[in-house]
Amino acid sequence: MSFKSFAKLTLISIFLIIVAGSVVRMTVSGMGCPDWPKCFGFIIPPTSVDQIEWEVGKSFFEGQMIIYEEQLWSAKSDFVSGEKYNSGNWILYTIHDYAKFNPAHTWTEYINRLIGAISGVLTFVMLLMSFRYWKTKRKIVSLSALVVFLMGFQGWLGATVVYSVLQPVQITIHMLMALLIVALMVYLIYELPESSAKNVLVFDKNLNRVLVIAIGLSLVQIALGTQVRQIIDEISSGLDYGQRELWIGLAGNTFKVHRSFAIVLVLINGLLFFRNYKFNLGFKLVNAVFAVVILEVVSGIILTYFDMMALMQPIHLVAASGLFVLQIALYFQLKKLRPFKTFN
Image 1 (cartoon, helix red, strand yellow):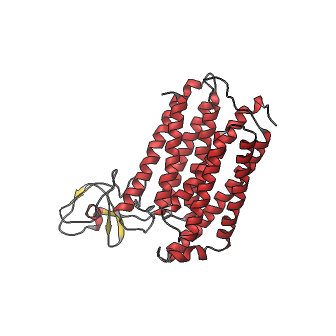
Image 2 (cartoon, rainbow, N blue to C red; image 1 turned 90 degrees about the horizontal axis):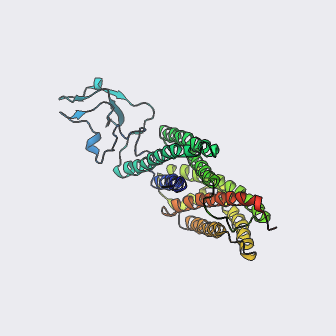
Image 3 (cartoon, rainbow, N blue to C red; image 1 turned 30 degrees about the vertical axis):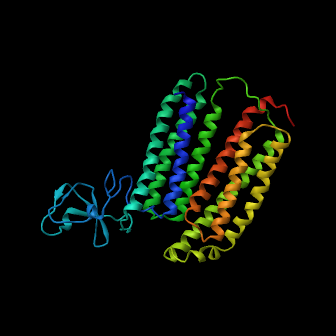
């Protein structure tokens, strides 16, 4: 497999982290594994509650966690339990006090972590492969190393999300870091030397200007969206995840601004689409950008008028993330064409 193909595979795996993360958030599964990086002390998480309960004559391994008297306990060493519970065999887990088990939540969060781990391995392999450019284009090696570093940092952020018991601000930072890594991967791919004939596309400065504005507006909209998501998380938690019909009404002005800003987003990306079509510029990414904008708006409307429909939440988030990634890809595509500008 060529380095470019492997880099694209790695990019897809990283984007899947965003998809999996949105599903975790939709299903409120973030605390399915109360510790990190293991899950209740297991490498492969438990599937039934009896695996994390104390029993007479049961074998426990060092680090294994149980829920006992509504608290999390970690085994000090390998042992077999006696007739009575011996607190001397256990250490109270004090990082947080969340002590619940839901197998569906546990495995949803575990799959999210597994995708992250696979992506981490792929980025490391990509770094090793990048050394083929050490003499010809060292920038590729530097970008690959930066991706590996940021993936490690992202893993640490994932741990802080768990330790904070899903504080909305921590979740938002975790998501934005994923977007940054994806954008960096797109940059890396577009920096790779061309192996085929010259691209027939030409640079258009006006399209580029509108695109830069569109990217800025997308970042503003994503920031507003994360604030709305934080507010909704707090409202839903306060209502014990019931009375969904009240969530939007209680979200206040931040939601109204976010909703109204979507009109600006449609207009600016519509302008991109119009210019690309009118002057027959041939940028297929522009069409993809506009299609994703429509998906984002439609999913937002459904969320608004159908009581924050659970299925639409990950679709809306993935659409927003996908829009940003496509815009970034288009920006670097134009940037690469800039030396050959022939259209104004």
